[in-house]
Length: 309
Ligand SMILES: Nc1ncnc2c1ncn2[C@@H]1O[C@H](COP(=O)(O)OP(=O)(O)OP(=O)(O)O)[C@@H](O)[C@H]1O
Image (cartoon, rainbow, N blue to C red; front, side):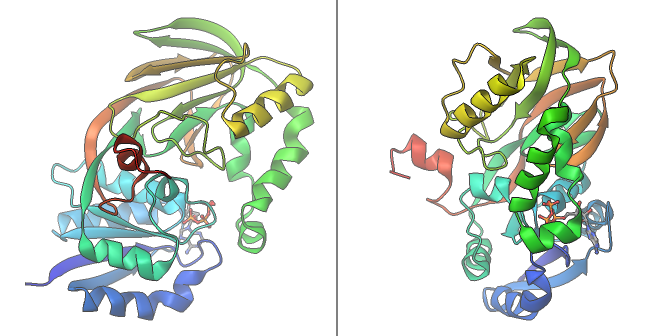
């Protein structure tokens, strides 16, 4: 019997590829034995409602088509359900950090074929207060730019829009005062930015958390201590090369539970979206979701099995 899939797509994602491709995508999935119905999101939060609805209606799998923002909303609709169907990804957004971390192809035909094959892998999710994230959580002025870049600009400029906004903001970055508590550490620091990574691929910083694994039951926590502009630029460029872990301005550790509070007003960024404000408790939900991946193609599998990337 054909499987029933629910395709939840953001028609405004990336360069609006879904609008042109929908017919071809449905045909390819259908040929592969997936009877697919669709939900086009109409605005913020809609993908969360659509995903929760798809779980309740008993679809065999859910497909999230769009960028990291759409994926974030979809997992938030699924995470609290008792039974969660596998999740396939069509990475058609401006930023697809998570799909890249899982080696899911950006090419729509290859991504559809992978979904049809249906090889799944359990992954951890991050829980923060009553929300969930799949890739990364963070706070500090640097992270705020991800939701300051207007959607129209992103459609035209893609990833470049973030870098432009980042440069514009650099001279205005201010440290925040944080209290960080975990089993491993009890810290009181002035910090520029803190990041809690679930996967190893973050906004162009593919070497940020080189040994972070999506199914190790742990977060990789990075704290960039208060520093001046020159040091900040040095650390950021070291992070781009994966050479930041021994930097004296960086605190790095692994944990499955961390509490962060601050006397300041600090916004939290979850997978690139606004995720509320501090105080927050972050915890790992181990192997909480099954993601459809290439049998031999995800990065962790490759590194574990010694295949050259
Ligand atoms: N019909 C719509 N019109 C405008 N915005 C929408 C619509 N549907 C969903 N959205 C919002 O668009 C945001 C960005 O979506 P998505 O991540 O898929 O695209 P993107 O191009 O990669 O952008 P980003 O880089 O911000 O993630 C989501 O947070 C979602 O709330």
